[in-house]
Image 1 (cartoon, rainbow, N blue to C red):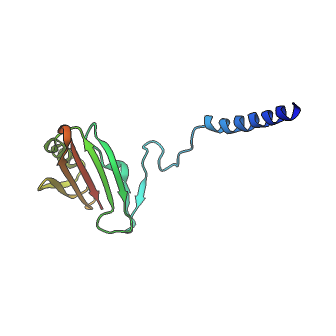
Image 2 (image 1 turned 180 degrees about the horizontal axis):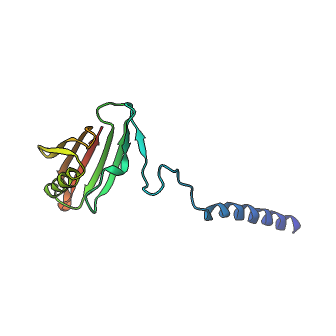
Image 3 (image 1 turned 180 degrees about the vertical axis):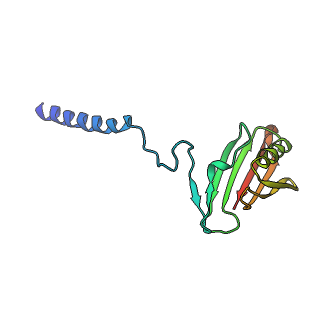
Length: 139
């Protein structure tokens, strides 16, 4: 009986110590504090600010690829939007245009440069239920 109690006590102590760690908030690197994003270094020494690329309201990011070893296609972010492609394209042209991006229609896409002159392309296609899907390629 004593052995069972001491094992139970030891087990309870281990569980209590383990759970104590769960009550502490996770530490967040300074680069991520406040905006849930961080700069990603690129081969040319510049940084891609992941928070600088807005999503159309109500959209969800469905994929993110960061390729710092390739020169032409550094960041690809795929998304699903609750609006048709024309509405999403117009929103991006207006929203990013106000931030100094130079974008022109290129078929079903917008193509041009960001405010720093880096290449940017936003491909947008129709999807089921009146939605659209797209890919933002930056770099």
